[in-house]
Length: 223
Ligand code: ADP
Ligand code: MG
Image 1 (cartoon, rainbow, N blue to C red):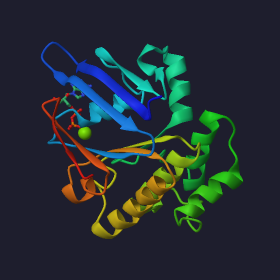
Image 2: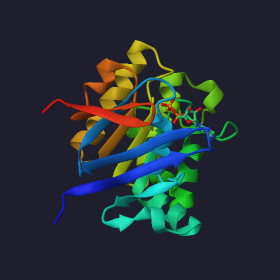
Image 3: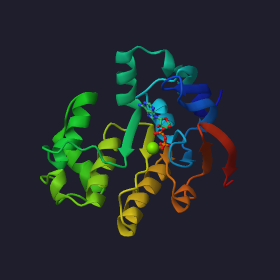
């Protein structure tokens, strides 16, 4: 029995005839592993993460998560699979501007099954935001918004956390706070795939994968 939670087989993504965003990517990720995906701008990092996260499909190749081939699922099944298995944290936060911190977390629960206010409050407490429940995103600092996103990502207890440049818009102090939460998620057994071009963030992972022009180059390991 394979220990791999995520298995990427020969994945290619073409956006049009001229743009090959990913070319023949193979990658195995174990349960509980923290992998960082590094590489220059335009190298295919976001495309790769979106494919892992069932937000986009490869043009060729397959992705298996927990033994199921997600690339074979219908649109609706893919959406359902994503809600149950994957939490996202984005550089640009992607919070709904007219909803409070609490409501932003509750809406993620709602899409999964049922909203539970007490549980959403507890999730925000865990990231140190119990005094910011009723604030709108515009009333929160970047670091606070990213902590709301972490609470939102964790609310449905997904196995996998995908993060695209999660510290890209943060100052050093907030970067440390946010990375502290990622370390906690890692210690709690979540599998993390994090895109970053910051070497000091990349080094926190168990393993680094490098993309260049959509191709995986020599993998660097910290083992
Ligand atoms: P990164 O996140 O490493 O900066 P991306 O995955 O965003 O890279 O982009 C990889 C390549 O694919 C780039 O050349 C980019 O311009 C192109 N690309 C990304 N998204 C699209 C899209 N929706 N349509 C067409 N081309 C795209
Ligand atoms: Mg990107």
